[in-house]
Length: 367
Image (cartoon, rainbow, N blue to C red):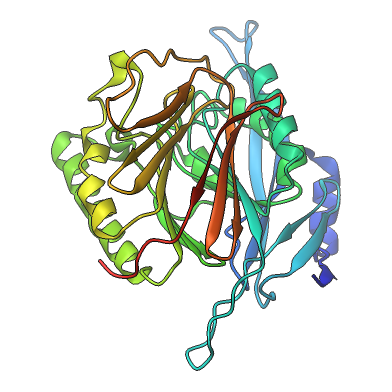
């Protein structure tokens, strides 16, 4: 694969400003497509204090500012290298460019992606998970939500980025909202997320990323129901347009099924999506929320919960009958290796142990 050097172009004034500010997050690469990508980093411009008296200001907070550079005109299927003065260097791959209307589709080069989630607490365990992820050298990673414990607590985001830095300096990042993000502005700003739900293509796979945290999406049940209806309508159209993809993956924080007894029946909105997923022959759905590993199969669709990124583990004490393939109370992440029309899925532990493995093939074209 041809490797191209990509240097960030910064004028003299911003460089001087950057040198005076502390970089607390990034750089990372988001919104990656065949021809575009955005490099994001976060700086601390200072610290303010507050208290109940002029002499007792014991509360402190950083003043964080997001900086980013968006590139266009890139080449599909290419590795790019970047440098942000004062922040660091890294590299990432762009997905293959889609075939033009008058061209026959070609089989994309093999690619690997990682799915993980619920990294919000137990930072030492989160670090162990990311050390294991780093060894897999993925083309891109997907986070199933609950990146931090409280989305609007700006002090938590630098911790998250510090732990993830080694991995995110080498790949593209695609996040989903969790309930602990609480739809906070920081999630959108620090990751340059442009919409609460979105989709992207990579090779012969299509990915639909959902916001399943309906409670934080709007105020009041009427507005929440309207929001969810709009998202479901979007998903229906998104999946309909992607029927020629060999693999169709849906990602959301909350799972439709769970082996955790006291959480069963909690996610009626997501469970109601099952007919839509079956209608469009989705290959698999990836979720988090439950802090363990779970794998179910129903009507040809795999449902994988990978919520073992650092948050306290939950018992898997009531696996649903007939659809359960594997459940385990353990830290984990999932690796998917796609080679043509064949995909190998592995759930891996932080010690490299293979918890579960299975093969996926493309669903039939059509509804």
